[in-house]
Length: 599
Image (tube, rainbow, N blue to C red; front, top):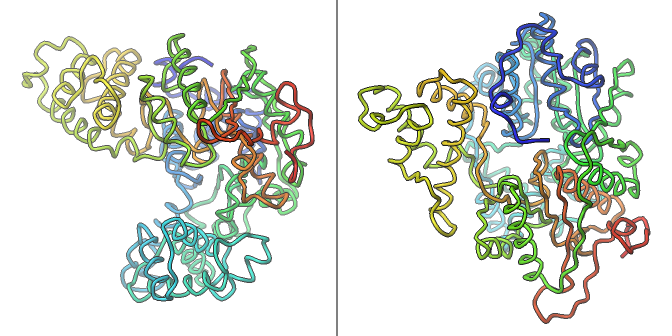
């Protein structure tokens, strides 16, 4: 796959329903035209699932089958919801609601609270950690920072699995979950946390779903109002729904069957948050007449990358593995995955930085390279190595692009210049839209050449440079566009969280890389004890770790590098072993299935 062209960045809206279907493969077209009854799309990594479901919505809207205001599309992250809104807008279906579960439930809760409960909706608690810390202190339980985070995660898990404080210990035992502390202690902290919330009239994100479920269950009149508004539902990443989200979805749906779900059981990597693929795998049992479509044509990755991904899953066990999809690459052949063993972690980081530098020198943009690891603590050594090699990078999980101070400042400056028009002296010598943008952003810190080094100054410049590149692409696609048109485009993108590309190698955990892709991916730190992580003990936990590696592998379009270090520090005892998941896949190794207890 080549980089996006201006015409693909800013495509023309299709002029008819049939035009919406152009360019879809037979299976994607089957999804797009299945507008009635329950539909289940089993979509492998890189098979164009978002394309299929957005074209389905747009085709239904344009054909007059799905009134835009009656469709609710839900997914799991603001980024994914924003991307969906952006695509629907480009396909001429801009009136459709595309939201996260929490966002959709919060809107409904805000609207119905005065009628259902009375008064104002309690304030939403942005971060529950401080309240959990206070609850622990009142229970005379000391928690360090990591324990505090773990206990907070346990409370979140309990709530999405609909376990009240007194039931938490039994729920943990039933699920074979390893609690970070004595379950009785967590139960006490959880109970006091809930009490503190009530005393202070605040609710948390899980309460948003719980309260909306309660209102829909207790008030048939409100449930009827919601169901009259939303007649058709689309659920992305359905393998990640929690029992609480599934209950909310059932209440939204009522006794109707106009629902389309899309997911891949082999990409279930969030069970620690309560996610389960069972709802996806049981969909046909709950909806016997469902249309089921499998998407297995992989447009993202080369045959070499796909071969490794299929090989990983071929060794998997369990229910999700029984429903795995065998991907078929649609791309030309590329280089084989590279496996590298290093004596220690700094040597591994330096080797990876050196290889990235070579790829960049060969023409691969820094923004098309990612270094992925199992735990966030692994990033530091790579930050240092990339800085030493003069390679720009960005940490995934930082604030959203359009919320960065420099981007907001640039937006204000561009809006002011657009209003001033010819009266703005900054634009006197600017002959076209890109030069107008460069002139305006020059006043906010953009320069033709990047500043030396890394850090905050370089991060600021990269953000502004991304806006300059976006203006250049926009002008190529729309030669007559004005500065006011660009400002309107930026506003649309900000609302959709559709950020331009920032130049810089991405450093990210495997969990946060889900849903993303790059030309070159470096999977690092692949030792037993890190992947699978040491606390993954049961067969089910080990299999989730394997799926995490599968997600990492399938992020790569062309170049894939897998590496590990025999010791942590230079001169250390090299007793580590490569991840058991690579057994039988890397050259010179024999297969043992990579199950618990393997090496």
